[in-house]
Image 1 (cartoon, helix red, strand yellow):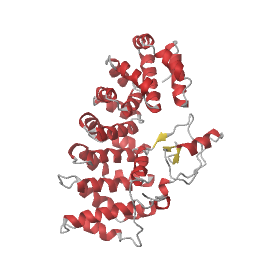
Image 2 (tube, rainbow, N blue to C red; image 1 turned 90 degrees about the horizontal axis):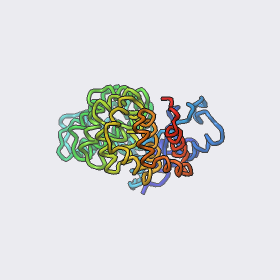
Image 3 (spheres, rainbow, N blue to C red; image 1 turned 90 degrees about the vertical axis):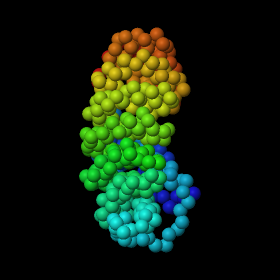
Image 4 (cartoon, rainbow, N blue to C red; image 1 turned 135 degrees about the vertical axis):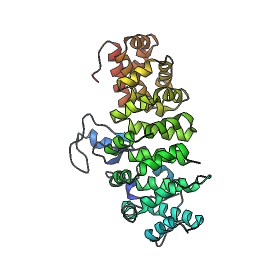
Length: 370
């Protein structure tokens, strides 16, 4: 198990300086541990602790799923204490050289991945040394076991940890290679590819770029439809991150995301409910959801037994649908959702209480302003 001193500095909250357990992104683009930034906000601050600039109101804390996954993976790894580090350029040259044996290339990928986990300075050095273009060639490697391709994707994921790198990675053509892997990847490569897209999409400008890329959203939806459990969860996480950008909501709906998300929600995938909540913010999404008679029953199940986030987004989805359709509002009241909402007003989670109160108002005839 890794000791705290072996974690990269990027895993530490800028406020507490402790390893983050629940990293969230502030509107300024900086990541903090949820408990630390919440204490900052509860103290009355409405500026970013790092930039000191005003933040959006109401305050939005976006879960940094990619970073949380990386921190979680670190806790499962035992790290030796290296006395020296190999020169990145020589490792990159091994990847590029056509004459390099496969074993040597795999060894170079492993060493580069270990280097990339250390800190942002090392990752910056790797990108400046040409690591990205070399690794992209590895992503294309035809390897039935998926090991080579998967290692390359993990390295790209590590390089994408730094916000300064995210836009540059997209500019170097990472999106095209990653999207292709969503379809053709082997082993765990498809799940890792979806996680890379989640990490890149944390930066607002990348949401638009990735969403507009041919087959990016379609590839994630296809993975959500035909993937295994991990792949479906990672695909839903990527769709959630991308769908905070309005145009991507419409793209997802046009690519038949709604019925596939409903199917996944019915199978118990809470992340699918979160995506439905975002898609319900667009007219096209609401129109599709109204067509599925079983959706309300699924959402009610999450209201009764889901996680706090699933409950929060189930409430949001129902509110938006009731605001859109009087028929849905009547049906929701008939199914006892009003009484469920009254009970949720006592929930420990502030967002659940707020969304429950909002839905109660909608059921009483008040219109939401979209």
